[in-house]
Length: 339
Ligand SMILES: *[C@@H]1O[C@H](CO)[C@@H](O)[C@H](O)[C@H]1NC(C)=O
Ligand SMILES: *[C@@H]1O[C@H](CO)[C@@H](O)[C@H](O)[C@H]1NC(C)=O
Ligand SMILES: *[C@@H]1O[C@H](CO)[C@@H](O)[C@H](O)[C@H]1NC(C)=O
Ligand SMILES: *[C@@H]1O[C@H](CO)[C@@H](O)[C@H](O)[C@H]1NC(C)=O
Ligand SMILES: *[C@@H]1O[C@H](CO)[C@@H](O)[C@H](O)[C@H]1NC(C)=O
Image (cartoon, rainbow, N blue to C red; front, side, top):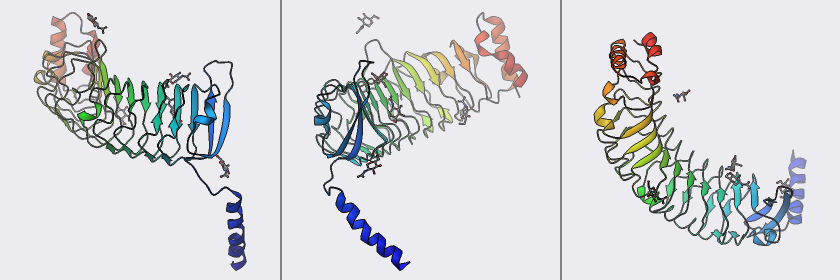
């Protein structure tokens, strides 16, 4: 045993001595670069150690830059700066824990930034300011803290924050941003305040989608969605909601798809829906025993997986006999499965 330890002790300092002792932000990191022209082949560059990328890329076709599954614990000021060609930049799966102020600068053509599958804990204010990308992927990190107005004034269209540790929603994060699709799935959010989305863009003729799949939302308060008149999708499946407060949809004119699957709702009544026009209402896998025909205005209603009572189904059949277009409600199946 003694001999074995002794030989390790002798070899180790020697092998470390071979390697330069200096280390940079990018320490033994492989960068893949590609041009947009489909005929150009991917180029692979090894950075032994350096604090910034620009000098390795700028005289090469580098519209697409991929650094994946390397080890880069920290990005520092100017480390990802002055890449004038890059459009799609992937920095995914690199164990990034910290992104300092000023890391990203002068990336005039950036469209997509992929920071998925790192270990980022905090999104500080100003990190992404001045970037003009459309898509930002921050999914599968460890984000629990987001600075005041951290995503405000960005030109983002799609923001992916799925699979993080965000427990509190703050409407200030998105002040004056132009996000159209916000994916907050699989976080730890329990509550959404009134007017939760009203500071987000009100894109002239586009409607917004907000996705909160797999959070811990317990109930929806009144006026949560106020301030935005049309939503493309509101997705709240896989939460813990047992009721919706009256007036939840006050101020909302239309929702194309409202997905409330996989909650614990035992009642959804006309007070709750108010005057909002919902095209597709998804209520599968809840605890509904009935739904009043007063709300039967949508094009599609999904209610499989609820303990619907046979008495209720009978009221629906009576309603169907008086209306012309109710085939959408799959009543036949329910007639056999009601309890
Ligand atoms: C550099 O990284 C590669 C794998 O990415 C690894 O095989 C190699 O040992 C590393 N070299 C040094 C000097 O750390
Ligand atoms: C850039 O990323 C976007 C979004 O992931 C993708 O749709 C597009 O095809 C990518 N462009 C190239 C040239 O790879
Ligand atoms: C971002 O990177 C992750 C990890 O490499 C990958 O799985 C994902 O497809 C990428 N997303 C896009 C839009 O390219
Ligand atoms: C939005 O649509 C309205 C009519 O529905 C039109 O008058 C207006 O110019 C459109 N705005 C934009 C920015 O496209
Ligand atoms: C509800 O959740 C379960 C478990 O995650 C899943 O298997 C099922 O497909 C979900 N139902 C719907 C309608 O999404």
